[in-house]
Image (tube, rainbow, N blue to C red; front, side):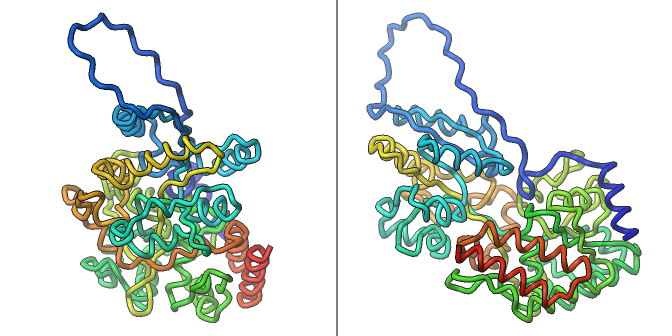
Length: 456
């Protein structure tokens, strides 16, 4: 397609660094702290040393600034000063982090702690018997303070808690507000609630295409990067689902999803593009080539591009507005991210106990404010040991405004068995739709492939 060729040429000419939230980024390598220089003896009484001692290892995926060594070191140094427990940190990238963790498990050299989400900690490593059950860390107060849906996502079907949650967010989409205004499409946005209906979305696409005569939004399907955006777009347009409520099977072969895919395929201005992943789509959106992005969250809204044009702006200075996905009644069910800590069962009771102390310090104490703010996401609980967390972002307008989307969080279906295989089946299915194959047939085949992965 001519439009697709133009997009590919422009993207190649304007490539910028990939964004962690939708495609991963290289992680800084772990380094040992430099030895402290010797200091003269002091006549002042030495401060009392912490009595706990010991050491633990933490491997963390790039979850906000938990992927930045300088920021994490502030937290771990404070923890060590209080407890005497040293923390050695390894920084993982999404590109190869799973391979490193799996290799460590196979070699009986897994870290004590890992920071990521339930799809890995609960549905993968926990389900396969590698994680410690943390439910003894949760008293009745914790269960009241932590959002029930979050805690349910961190709990295995047998009741074991394999993740102690820290932060969450809602994934959303974004629009080039200046471009919408020029096309007269801003009338279809409710910027007070950040919502819009399916009909208004389709009218906006028509208006944008009439104005610009080119692709304004891309259903990217090169791979799984940012695929939450395409799933939520398709599911919400006419009320389809991705899995059943019990997370036992994949259900994206229902008629509502087929209707949504057919509409996206036929409308001018939307292109199924197998040359793009989520991070690639965002680059084209930053450059003003695409007028909307389906791979978006608070990380992009805070730091949308590398051109230093400012928060919430494209590279040419046009205003970016975050939006919920369109749905028939305007109340979409958004896909979310949950991140926290899991403990690998390495058979060492002391290290397990020290790992739990680390979790308690970061996720349920007065220090939780710093741990949450380092992630640049939102707390999963209302309070932590008497510290109110509800107003944690009151001094940050963008973060505070973004919280309007949190009530739209839908089911965390990423814990469904066979998740990795299902993701592959999804983007392959989108490619088939883009190539013009019969939609009902390829959707049925994709869902069947996903359910085969779940059964295996």
